[in-house]
Length: 214
Ligand code: SF4
Ligand code: SF4
Image (cartoon, rainbow, N blue to C red; front, top):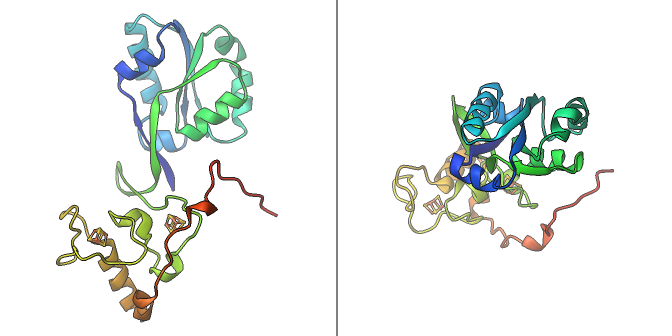
């Protein structure tokens, strides 16, 4: 499971860094490295790009896992280089950006857009598996998430547009509810296709989501 990110354009990053002339760049050694958006090579390339934009890069690092609380050790280690910068440019998912912001007063600028939590299908190809809806129905859908796999996020399906196992919204994609049907058939649990799922109650996912694990 990885946090899937894509790099913002250099133009966007330049706008975010407007008025911030010196920068410390931090990548992430976990998801952003796997997705080639914030690993060693991408951090080195970003350093060159920012220097071409006339920025001073006071230092760079790749934090082992930017979202982890051990990040504060890395921040301490680079205190001088971070202290002499106007801002930190973080090449990790939003969790990492948030984590870094807890440990320093410097402006924290994200270099990446966080897209979704996903799994890798093929090298460099990812798909969303969970939108963290707070009411998981996987136990009754053959382990396939209708919220993320169905174009309409239907928890009761299929819709009337499914055709030859393909989705009406995107004919290149399998209909999630056909996949669910086939999986439940394999499991001899097709009766679950007739079970009505109540509409999702988004009140169970208030913002921000909080929980206490006991
Ligand atoms: S139903 Fe889908 S989105 Fe909701 S918790 Fe389960 S896997 Fe995640
Ligand atoms: S065709 Fe299938 S995947 Fe597409 S919107 Fe309808 S139920 Fe969902």
